[in-house]
Image (tube, rainbow, N blue to C red):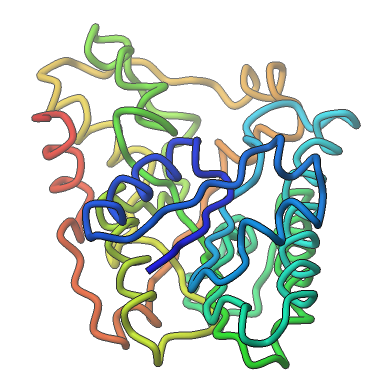
Length: 288
């Protein structure tokens, strides 16, 4: 199967590409240079493929000033617009039958417990960006394409994301919780992330919104305790919320608040997690 991936050189894209290649699929990566060339170039790359996986988007843990907001917004909305335009412009027989497009659990508020049917959405910059991101897929919703939207949680892996940033601190005994530590932490092991997308590709009845999180959400304090224990180090420190606001401004809410999210639609389709609990996920990654 020919599978085209945007954002394929990032942390998630690298793992996913390797996982799908190992299953025998042909992987085509759409690079930033391809996106800059525009619709003609991208159309050639997606022509006659079976699947498009859109993971493009610049990191959100940085100050939400005007230039950073523009970069975060453009990297998501413009890329999604381009994918939709190119898909629509291909002859029906050359269009991919499945489009998988990323979003994030930042779309949900920090108070309720959410499954995919939740309407308690967040209204800060990140929440509204996720809503705009998903809305850009509307032209595909009434078409013949099978569309899967991924609301991705915190993906755990030592080569990128949250764990890569904090693991060295914990190894040397400088780890600690953020603020109160009570904020929700909805995670997924990178291998379950890859397996979930494989599941969506292989099960043709799967479409709609899917929360890509483990079925047992946690908290920042529990993450701190489990990681410190796995590293056999203490974790006495606390990062004050004020310090994060001084560093990141309004973007600090992405660290001091968190969502509690359940992957109900994945579970309903029969997906089985290898790492359903945080302790299992952390111990596997630290041991590796």
